[in-house]
Every structure is written in structure tokens, then in C-alpha cells.
Length: 271
Image 1 (cartoon, rainbow, N blue to C red):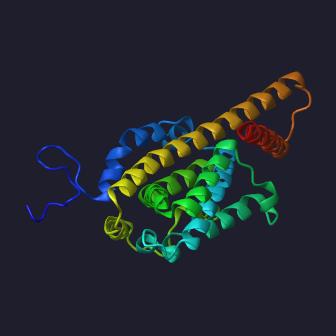
Image 2 (image 1 turned 180 degrees about the vertical axis):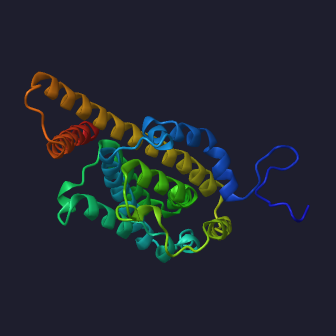
Image 3 (image 1 turned 180 degrees about the horizontal axis):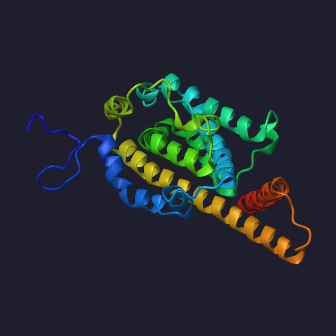
């Protein structure tokens, strides 16, 4: 039928020719795995903590800084130009406001990320230099995912952390997008119009799977960092029951330990 979207499966059950639908099909299992990481399950249950949110913001900042640097640099590339919407989608400035809210004016000195985040950023910069068409996969999975779940996750975060205002939640808001659903339709249409060879399209699909895997690794690394820090802090309190650290000191200790773990992780990755 003419009214049927070409991206839907046809009568034989095959995925349509639209790139957006092919990415959705290729990453279906990875998407489920990402949603079932411990960090994301905590989010879904409304159990996100301030420390979890802070380290998540740090990693998101490094990822989006790399992605948007490369999108800006390749803005005129035939594969990037149709989906280049800096005014509507850019997240770096929003993340900078959130980080300054939580860490203060010298927040740049306090950004900590695990090895998985470093790998993610390195991958984005590599393909930006060598195969910019592969950025399509990362832009699609990140931006449309944020648009789809941003409002819900923003409300969960605000409620879980007991925030009385929108400060610290800029990442979840897209002031340049009046209707997320209409914008997502526009974005998919633009992306589906990109001219790619069959080889390039196959590479984009593989990269979309890799994008989800990189995200899963980031979530897992963040959770490991936080788990080790929490266990160590608990052991410290158990050894010194008479000297209970104030909450601010616990947070500083946790952040400091995360820095050490991140440094060790990066070193192991470099071997």
C-alpha cells in the first residue's frame, strides 16, 4: 500500500531498504542488552544516585565532545550534511552547564571517565578522520535515543535526586526541537536520503552495532568504578566506626578513587 512506510517489513518479513530501519533491526539485540545494564536498570527503577549521575555526565561529555567535534569538522561531507543539526541537537554546551552546576566553575579539572569512555571517544575521532560516513551510525543512535528517552529520563533523574529545579538537567532538554516526534521523522527522512554504496551501508550497520557495544562497555565500566569505590568507602567506615566521614568527604573520596581506577584502566588499554 502507498500509505505504508517503506521502512516497515514487507510481506516476506524482510527489513525495508531505509537505512534507519536497517539500523534498528541490526541493533535490536544490542539495544536490549544496553537497557539491561546495571546502571540503566537503576535508572529505570528510579534508583539513580547523585554520584552515578555525576560520573555519567562526565562520560557523556567526553563522548559528545568527540562526536560533535567530528560532526563539525565533516559538516560539508555528503554523508553528514543531511543530518547536521547543530542548533537543534548539540549536547556539549548543555552538558557543560550541568557539570558546572554539580562541580563548580573548575569542573573541567574534575571530569573523570573510565577506559571504555576513552575508547569510545578515540573511535569517534578515528572514523571522523578516516571514514566520516560512519559517524551517521553514532549520531543516529545517540541523538535519536536522547530525543526518545530524554524527557522520561529527565523526570526520573529530577525525582530520584530530589532536584527542585531544572538546573543540572540541561542534557535532557532540546530547546531547539519543538516536537521530538516530528523532528525524529525529519531526521530519519534526511538520513535515509544519504547516498551510500552497498559496502558503505554495510559498514554503517556494523558501526551502529559497535556504537551500542561501546555504550554498554561505558555503562559497565562506570558501574564497576562506583561499586569498587562504594565497597572501599564502606570498609573504611567499618574499620573506623567512631570516625564517620561527612557526606562531602565520602563523595570526594569516591571521585578520587574513580580517578585512580580510570587512570589504571587507560593504562591497561594502552598496552
